[in-house]
Amino acid sequence: VSFPVNGADAQKYSSFLQSLEPLKKLVVALAPYDAGFVPELVTYDKNHEDRIPFRYVRMNKPSRKMVAEKLRAVLTSARDRGVDILIFPELTVDHDALTEIHNFLSLHNSPEQLKLVIAGSFHRERNQGGGYTNSATMLDWQGNDIWRHHKLHPYMLRTAEIPENSKRTALLKLFGAESGDDAEEHIRTDYPLSFVDTPIGRMATLICLDYLASQVCETVGGVGCHYLWVPLMTTSIDTFNTHARDEYGAKYHVLSAFSASVSCPEMFGVRKEDFSFLYAPSRRFGKSGEHPDVIRSEEPPLILYQLEIML
Image (cartoon, rainbow, N blue to C red):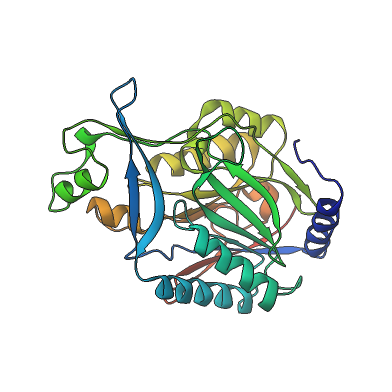
């Protein structure tokens, strides 16, 4: 279990744990709020495998004002609906959006309200050693950075798998892949996987393809993890569903909560589906099991799951 805590961090961590101690029931909300978002990308010269490295710089559309308004609407609704843990999608929370979430929590929240926000992820520059990461930031009830997860398995855009539709040409241009070369996330992946012990159980965050890696699954099972928070960006949810049920759920009784991007399937021009979902094995999370009470909100977009904790 990796979680270095000392000095000022120890005080923040203690406050975070105290906010979770009273919980007997848990409300988890998924926030696929990024409909209409368009990223600004940077591409680089081909690497030794003839792939085009890319990274997200910021979200271009909607306007910065609209992004802030959407975030505040989601955060306010989640807080007022009694949500304990709120999860945003992969590659939707850029620097400005992360600052907006921090400011909301520090000014408009309490330990009885939102207790943990998984602030999606974005490509961020490393402080040491150069390069970039795809990083998810976990914020406590007062907006403190409690821990981070850096993606371990980069995404590769295979041009041959892009559907033949009206958006194909624009998508290839966006990723600099008009020549037919594949594109790959330009990120460093040399990071450990951190597990955090809390009064309601052991938790970790994974980003997208990390969840499907067999070594990650074995590690999660080996340390007795209870919760996986998964910011996600995908055009197909089937494999994640299968792993949640047959691997993490059946073998290790792990709750998996996926908050999926809406802008990704929009960019690919594929059929819009509800990719965000939660799977909770009944052995640890009450008799409702994989079908907990669900409340859906269209505006702002929220999917709420209410669970009984039986750890």
